Length: 88
Image (cartoon, rainbow, N blue to C red):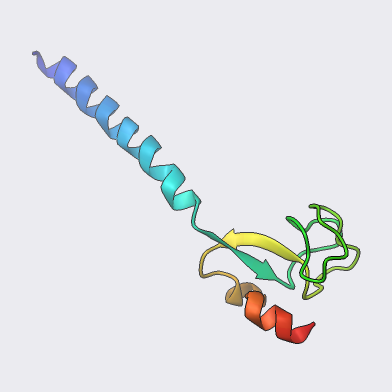
């Protein structure tokens, strides 16, 4: 195998590894309550007044949530589920 073919094979292998590894890192998300803007929530709220995304009537309501990368909710001034349940 010549040098050009070896470099191409190594580059293809590296790209494949990066593409396979990226989705796993992107899937680590958690529900963050109290940060969703009106009409921008990700799904049903804690109080059960609606069951679909985009139906939040009020911004930053503690029952409404958005998915955020794991570990970032507190920095966004949000709450995890247990805290949100206590607040509502």
